[in-house]
Amino acid sequence: MSAAKPVLDKTHYSNGNSALPGRSKISSKYKWKTDHIFRSDEDWENACGNLEKLLLKLEKFQGKLGESAQNLLGCLRLRDQIDELIGKLFLYAGLKNDQDTRNSKYQAFRDKASTLLTRVKEINSFFQPEILSIPEKRLWSMVNDNPKLKIYRHYLENRLRLKPHVLPREQERLLALSGEIGEGPQHIFSMFNNADIKFPTIIDENNQKIEVTKGRFNRLMQSPDRKTRKEVYNALYGTYKNWMNTLAATLSTSVKKNIFYARSRNYKTALEAALHPDNIPVGVYDNAIDSINNNLSPLHRYMQLRKNMLGLRELNPWDLFVPLIRDVKFDVPYMKSLERIEEALQPLGEEYLSVIKKGLKNGWIDVYENQGKRSGAYSWSTHGAHPFILLNYNNTLDDMFTLVHELGHALHSYFTHNAQPVIYSGYTTFVAEVASTLNEALLIDHLIKNTADPRKKFYLLTEYVDQIRGTVYNQTLFAEFEKLIHRKAEAGEALIASDLNQWNRDLYTRYFGAAFTMDSLYEINWCRLPHFYYDFYVYKYVTGFSAAVSISRRILSGDKEARDAYLHFLTRGSSDYSTNLLKDAGVDITSPEPIEETTRLMEELVNEMEIISTTL
Image 1: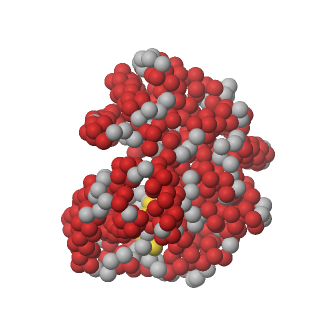
Image 2 (image 1 turned 90 degrees about the vertical axis):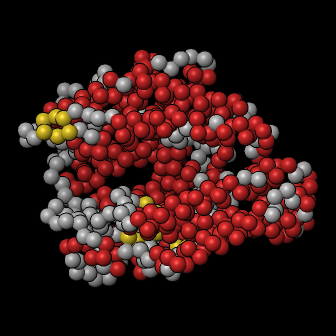
Image 3 (image 1 turned 30 degrees about the vertical axis):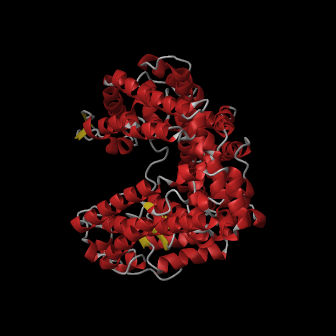
């Protein structure tokens, strides 16, 4: 991090004037080390054979779990061993495939790993029904009589918690057989949205023809030319409108599917059924919606500021993403970004920073783009191996934030894997984004406080406000829409396009405030969003972001107890329920306070933007 910058060959990264390098041209210091998982492909293949042998042993436990504590312990330990091994097999195959997706050998490895994973799930399928068939008194007697079983207490409690919603075996079989049909609406929407829908060509401000695509849409909506933005907007939304009734039927079927499975499993509502597996009270979901609706003022003020800064009579949907200030450039080479990240994460303490340094020295990160490499970024971890991070770093501000985000995930996994047994080595999606978002919060706070140029500071403030707008306000709007359409369907109402449009229009009008002028096409925004096929997922963005903001602000204030509680949270994996883990970290996500704290942060940021705007 503080080391001297290396002399980079231009083939290490993509720029406008050079072709992408082949992977062999990338320096090894910027590539991950997959031999830390398996030393060779041959070792990986041998491990596949070992997994098959372990699965044969696991099958022998079927029908015998309730016979003795020794049988139960032996089965649980063997399942842990299998879970760790399949995790490592899948990780190795996935990383090898992603570093060059053209390589047929590693395509085959990944396919084989997928097949093995399916086999693991198939053989494991006896476990849950058999555990639930053991009388509870006998189960806890077995656990209490064998000290080695006590580590599994929370795991077994969680299994039993779900028992009222587990059906007799034949009914479970029928539900399982319907699973592929149940996935139909999401699959149909995905095929339509990603493969079939095509958008028209527009003429941009430079008199160039541009075919509008979903991939180009966000960039084109940042064009300084308002006429171009509006034409792009009309091209995309006008196309979706042509399919409005079909998409309404698809979404309605997805909602009815959720209601069918919820009622089949004896849940009162589809929302309750979606939250119960993670033991999240419905009140957490409702609290997110209520808290944001009670604190819309910061978003309304930001919309007014955006309207004023752009000098518009009307702020329309095609004006929501254009930069408020132009010609601000952040060139952040990889080594420079590491220096900035180290500075920003100082409040987390030396132990946290030492793990990052360890990762940088030991092949955790695959930094630069190369021919055939998977696009985007991720952190991938499994028990028994250190975390790995995929980047396609290209010296932008976004790239630096992507890096600090993925480091958050990686260190969460690292600390968990070092502290927890396999059974608790994962964590729910409800808490997954806390560690990554907290890192981003520390970084942007550091950059804002240490940027003297008012134009650059204003740019950073806008980035932060837009992040809160997109992750907290917009996702809450989506969550409220999703709850509304399920409630309507559960009451027996039809979900037709005209009603969906009106409900969506009402929400956007309320959330965005008087400065925003709603457009008739924007009311069909529900048509293009895959979020509504993920079964009440979006609220987790709101709670995760708000929890991270709450913790980061106390850490930044110098609260050592808050820092220590957070670092302890990173070690706990799934050893307790998500709400309890966050409460121990100092955040009661069942209360309005964390979300209200995020809205107060946005208020502060807008205040600062308004002051700086008078000097630009």
